[in-house]
Image (tube, rainbow over all chains, first blue to last red; front, side, top):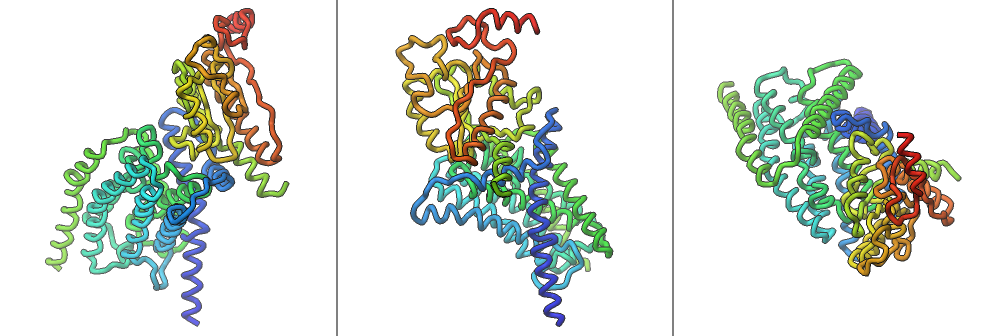
Length: 308
Length: 184
């Protein structure tokens, strides 16, 4: 009986909140918020509220060029894999009081968050377009750079508490270490979400659309959706770590959504205020300037372990 | 028409993504096309997005009087745009070859090579005329995809001062442009 109850709650999390039923509209909403915020900061009015939804529906109705062979099959596969990984990552976030299972498993969450970017790298190379290959190479370099900081920051928060369960980490009282870790994650998010100043892989006007150059119709719709879901998952991770511990479930959900929204606004403001950096500057930024956050975080985590 | 088709038709009208191509233009129309995306005109209110890849686009915007060099590129890019698609000829050049009409380097007008849906006359056309033309093209595209029947090409009216009558485009007489100048 308890098992059945667990199964139903796990499914409800994956499919309703914070899973697919919440995540897909939230993905469209965040894509709209980003575009609208950038437009407002540029003194424009910007796209209507339903714009990402219209774009998605329109792309579903477009034809795709016929691509025979394994390459064509792979090109259809990557966007689907990216969407399912990003949706799974959102479903794992422990927004509501937990019941066990994979819920809030940090290692699985990090793996799922990393999969869309892997898919983008593979997608660019399997499209055989020269712009796609340049974009994929850039994405690979970018991913190696920001992931060092991103992973070190998360690992240091986890190491200070001797646990890899996100829920246990979310319930921590605010500490300097946690604030440092969240700051390091925030610095990595623009690169993870490919927005300015780190919009290198899909640099428009420069290498067309990067890895996405050859994708059309429903495949492109899936890429847009996976990008939106990445927004939800990445901002959700920050919200989970930053949110205070609340026992009332609707208040917890509300705080989660509010913090995610604030992070989206912050990132959009950064995107609107900056121009794209070159790839060498970006790599130097992460390896030289931002690594200090991660080193500080991990050393303070180690220090805390030795003291306790 | 069922609900899904209605939604699809509405979405196609509300989300025109452009790919811009220069067919030997003097760059006047290209600048005006970019101007239509700037804060003053803000075409993104209609869902317009300038895309980097023709694979993503719905509407192909072509400027210039179509030089010999551009013909093959235009045909290739037209093939790369995935259906349903529409073509907007921006400026007087793709429609009539304008003042370059006697040049031996030209292979125009555009209609000889690919089907054109909307002509936006002007030398160069104003950004608001271009936005109007793109909106019309999105309407044509949605209608053609829904009814599967051909739609006749549309010539947009001149907006604002536009052509001053000095060129050979024939879309405006000197008196018309003089009248519009007086109105301004």
